[in-house]
Length: 225
Image (cartoon, rainbow, N blue to C red; front, side, top):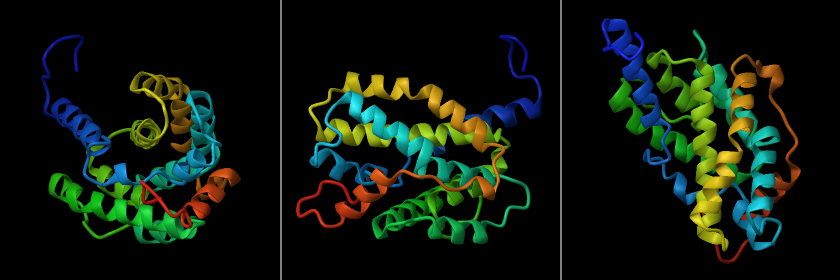
C-alpha cells in the first residue's frame, strides 16, 4: 500500500481485509463469553491479594509473563505455523491446565470461538482449547504471528481488567490506565512467543494457580473461573 494513497492491488486489499478481520476475531466483544471468566482473579480480589490498580497491574503482569498468558501465547504461535498439528496442540493445551476451572474456561471459550469464526473464515469449527482454536482460524488471514499474539494477549488482559472494574472500587479510567501500562509487556511477549517452540512452554505463576483452585470452593461467585 502506498503512503496515504488508495489500495491499488488485490494483495493489498486481501492483506488489509485480513488485518481488519483479525481485530474483529480478537476483540473482547467477539462472542466467546469471556466476560464470564476471570481466571481466579475473583478469589484474589475477594481475599484482598488484589485490591487496587497497583496490585492488579502486578497480578496481570505475572499472569502474562509467567502464567496462562505466556502458555497461551506459545500455543497460539505454534498453531499459526504451516503444517501445525492442531489436534496434538489441543491435547497439549488441555494438559497444561492445572485446574478444572481453567480447563473448562479454555475449552468453552475455544468452542464458542470456533463456532462463530468458521462462518467468517471458513476454517474448521470443531471444539479446541482457545489458543489453538484462535490460531487455526487465523491461519488464512496471512497476518504476522507477532500481531496475532499481541492482539490475543491484549484481549485477555482487557477481559481481566474489566472483571476488576466490576468487582473492585476501580474506575474505568484507572482500569484503562492499567491496561495501557501493560502494552510494553504484551508487545515483548508477542515478539518472544512468535519464535518460541514447545520447549519454551512452562512458567511459574503459583499465586494465580492457587487462586484458580480456591475459586472453585467460593460460596458466592460472580465469575465462572
